[in-house]
Length: 212
Image (cartoon, rainbow, N blue to C red):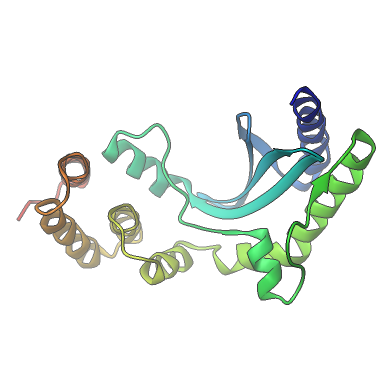
């Protein structure tokens, strides 16, 4: 796997160099994931994650697009006690391409060092051509609320929605979600229930809103 590691390091270095003039800055990296972010406007940031998977032939690359409202995300992390809050919405670039009738299977691979520049250029081109509309559809707090409303109902999505409503000034909607979370905590497994109770309590304290 030493070859794959060196290839991954080369790819990440080249990608960061080429992406920087386009406004992307690296925000996170581990052995299998590197994240880039750029501001859309205000607290809303486009994110581009690259899953880097070592294969016998070299590297398979899976770009994932997401949008984060940093204010909402930071508050969700604070209320839950997480190190980092979630993005509001996300989709793999391969799914976006398939929805547009383009591509199938493994689309982005690197087998040797000489292929790195072409792979970098291809991903950045595909993100621009097919991902720009994804980012533009989620470029306001109202857009993100709409996406969260349409997403599968989970405690984390509900938490994001409650904070998003509050940030957007939709206080009755936020409190309605909060009451739903309070009821949910009564039937959740113990660990999840403690997390939910902590979120609800921290939310009420931060925004100075009363309980049940």
